[in-house]
Image (tube, rainbow, N blue to C red; front, side):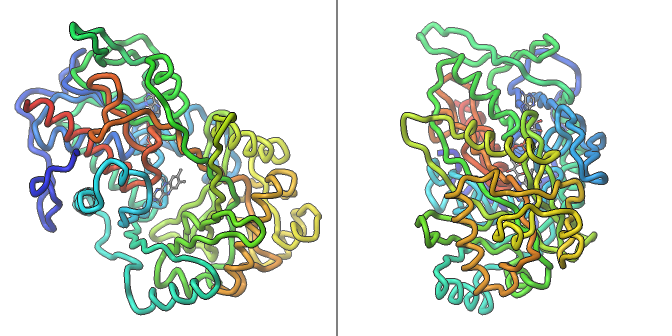
Length: 492
Ligand SMILES: Cc1cc2nc3c(=O)[nH]c(=O)nc-3n(C[C@H](O)[C@H](O)[C@H](O)COP(=O)(O)OP(=O)(O)OC[C@H]3O[C@@H](n4cnc5c(N)ncnc54)[C@H](O)[C@@H]3O)c2cc1C
């Protein structure tokens, strides 16, 4: 267990500012107490915890640029320039830097950490990381929860066969999320060494006298080597493929997660206002009429924009919203989870193959009016233009999503839209825009113990890349968890 009862709980008003380390941690060196691979929320929160508690020497290696240098051309052009690495997902702040910055405060949402800690401990850990996000500037306001209005929506959803998952949300907004991550960067500057634009190519290991294999550091793609007493891998979804290859090379057993496949839906914001004004994000689960598959709403962005996510070999669709710069539209994903059993064991390739079909048929992302999809015709720029919803992702290619998604997934999504229509009339309309493909690859998961250690001694794996989280809060919590395991180990 990596939560220390009574010791590390977030306390409202507690100052989380870092103390200055006892030695000159910024001095360039080649040996550290800990090396962290990846500067997303998981890596950053691991670093914050390590230096906050014990002032250990820590190196963070990040393959993307520093947060100030991250610029995504698609944000203005709507067309992906295929930057390598992708500025949306790589660099200080990770995929969290330009995310919608929704801190989902339910321990049941955003990952699988409940498989490692019990519910009470996970709740305390969520409170703890939420406290840190707030300390660095996340707003006090929490949307959702168990208000009378939320209960009314829950009851209505049940009437129409949908379950509303209790999921209070603190919304930072894209620009504020980036500012907060920048503040964390500034704060860590004095105590942690950071190498940006440096990709870790290999994990170093040695064979111990007792026969165990131990992590001893990392090698970057430019050949530079850093040794360390402990290594935390936090490479995010971007680095998931790399992590899988390293696990295979090191003989660490892997377990597959499901792959979520679907579309992003965009509607006039007023249509969803009855839900979003109360809940901000409504997490609804529905078992489809035709196939009895679970379909869920995901990542709802009131007054937001649809955006791109570049994985290097495929481009998928996503969405976010700014705290201040509001659009007239709301977007959200409808996702169908697929858990393959055997003999097929490569859900990531399956998901990528579907995303690749959209990339092949469009420039990268396809957009279609729901009415056109139902009538079996592709959308055209002209038809979309005369509709009531104008795409916020301007570079998407009007096309036909029935050539992209398998029938089963498409049918599931259409069934869910019909159900949603009863809760929020106007969602299942002719002009509703559908973007594809949205695919969530939940990375294969290395075997981990309760302290998030892999089968290699002193090697930890956290965050989305390790397949144990899928959101900012749980990713942050997993980083804290690994850091605490390292601190416990060091104290023994
Ligand atoms: C557009 C968008 C909107 C989102 N909105 C939300 C939201 O509102 N709420 C929410 O909870 N979640 C949201 N998410 C998801 C959230 O951003 C992730 O769950 C979270 O960032 C995962 O954190 P992480 O640290 O595990 O990985 P990441 O944030 O992906 O960070 C991993 C980092 O590791 C680096 N890296 C990878 N491989 C290597 C390597 N070999 N060497 C060195 N560095 C490496 C990457 O460059 C990256 O910076 C969103 C994601 C996107 C893309």
